[in-house]
Amino acid sequence: MKRRQFLNSSIAAAIATSLPTGQALAAALAAMSEVSGDVDAVTGGGVSITLEQAAVKELSDSLRGRLLLSGYEGYDAARRVLNPTIDKHPALIVQPSGAADIMNAVNFARERNLLVAVKCGGHSFSGKSTCVGGMQIDLSSFRGARVDTESKTAYIAGGSLLGELDHEAMAQGLVTTAGTVSHTGVGGLTLGGGFGRLARRYGLALDNVAGVDIVTADGKLLHADANEHPDLYWGVRGGGGNFGVVTSFEFKLHPMQRTVIGGDVVFPLKDLAGVLKVYADYAPVAPDDLYLDFVVSSDIGKEDGIAILHACYSGPESEAAKVLAPIYKAGTPVNDGIKSIDYVALQSSWDNTDPRNTGSYLKSGFVNDIPDTLVSTITQNFKTYNERGTTMFFQHSGGAIGRVPANATAFAHRKSVANMFAVVEWPLAEPRDSHVRYIKEYWKDFEPFIDGWYTNEIADHADKSVNRNYQGNFARLLKVKNKYDPTNLFRLNANVKPTV
Image 1 (cartoon, rainbow, N blue to C red):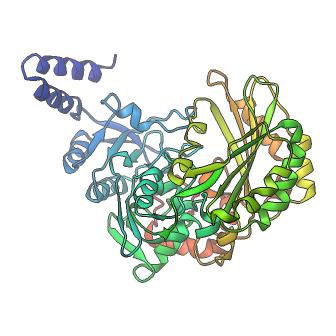
Image 2: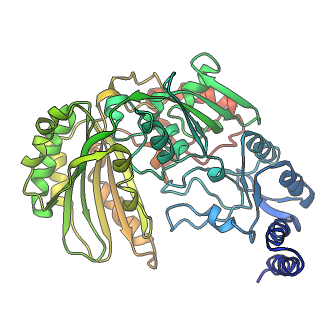
Image 3: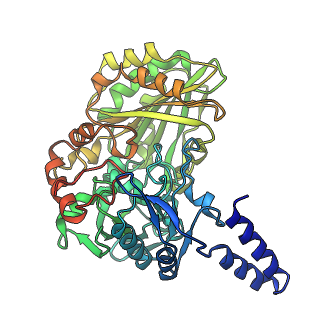
């Protein structure tokens, strides 16, 4: 046991024997949060530094929220992300209670050039929301959603999860695009794009952002919208976390009935070619109020797989049968789960498909059409393996997403009809290298069909690839980066490296 951990636990035990239970618990937690010495850390450039005890204590005293160091209660839970193969240890973790705490944390990090990670829901496949030796700003204690029905606006605290947005808005008969898994962080999803079951009808999540409050690298809290700091407002909508920590989002809301028609239709793997062909033909021309995903998947240790068409139809119920009819031409379903369902319930229906209790790695790319050659490539290449699971899926795009000009926001991929993913999973006890090599090799056959990739899925892309991926918007993004984060404090993202 580390000396600090031993002393902390001894102090807590001693206090507990002399105070009433509630006071003992509070005193013990306080004792376990004392800064007991200097802290080893790293800069954004990877240089080892030492944070003096007095400075770390001063940071801790400036917060209404918590400062966690290794060995403190809550440190291990805070540093973890949903991908369990990511096992990183920040030097210190700030859990802010509000914007003032974030400002203090950013100022501390900037003055010392600390490596900084920002965690909202922890969904980053590549672990960009945690770090080794830097500062993690963990927004999990900074959540809340408020709906103004008169202006049809939702005000969402920076650390909130999508389920909070859906729950509060739909209670007032209002919605906005909010992903497909309810425990996803609002910030991470929205700043990179924000696909979801209503995106073809109402646009990406970022298309519905009316304004943000954001702590930039200089430690200032700014409001950015179409009139105030419009360059920053443009940049955060697709530029990811490159410019600061968003403390509050304003979302435009839309009236919608609570009941939708949706669910999964499951087909046997032998129907894969037919299912994919129906998807390829129908997805690009489907009405805006239909969201349709394609999935083909095999689990670890199973010799067979399944193909799935997942639907959410939010239009008039009288039109549902006609709109959904093409799905049933794809093959012979083994299970038909499409039904009338509460929208908020459908939004959480995939929550258990994302438990991250296996190792995983993904590749992704946008496709602007789904030609027969892509259909045949997927059909011929998909295999099942006992030692790993493989999933190919398409997330539906187009509709209202594609009617926004590519330069209207920093998100450039308006031509796509779908975002295509290939995911490999393996037992956690196994080394990752062979499985990652497998999916990278597998993905090579699909690279000719893609036109850029979703920045929220960034893993180990080279700098030049990141720059090209912003397409015609990169030069403008660079100007915004140079202005608001000239030292690249916020770099754990699809990073736009400043030139000043």
